[in-house]
Length: 218
Image (cartoon, rainbow, N blue to C red; front, top):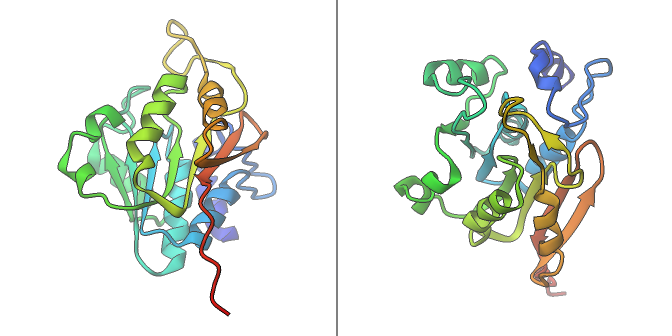
């Protein structure tokens, strides 16, 4: 794992976007949470909505490889920030350069993806990472699009869910306030969900169904 992290961090863009990564001591930061959950839950399907340069899908993808039982990461990323995700060959090579070959890139918004056959056939989602446009409205749409596919053991994660910073990721002429936290506050009032905040960097929130697992028979 240490070798893989050093390899990953040769690309300095993997140290950006507030996941508390550190190259100095090979620290994945919040990436340890992503990796650990995928190793623990061993999901068949992981959905990642939004990624600047692929840190989150790469970390999930590495975990699925290490599980040795297959599975795929679906990255829903329409490349609205820049053109990075618009060349399919470049995208494939980008993930392969880190030894990850199980990421399936969907060059669409969530609103577009839910209209496709791929979405209808997706089935259960073991892990959902919401990190697209950081507004209350878009976070709500992203979550509700997949909420019905989350089972008792599934976990949804929201990045940028605590701080309400001004984002200029779409350009200095298109700033907006990150309001994901307002949607998280609404989720906390819904008894069917358990919600837990990690207030590190801009924040990470974990959400799972409040249903308890069955008690094993003695």
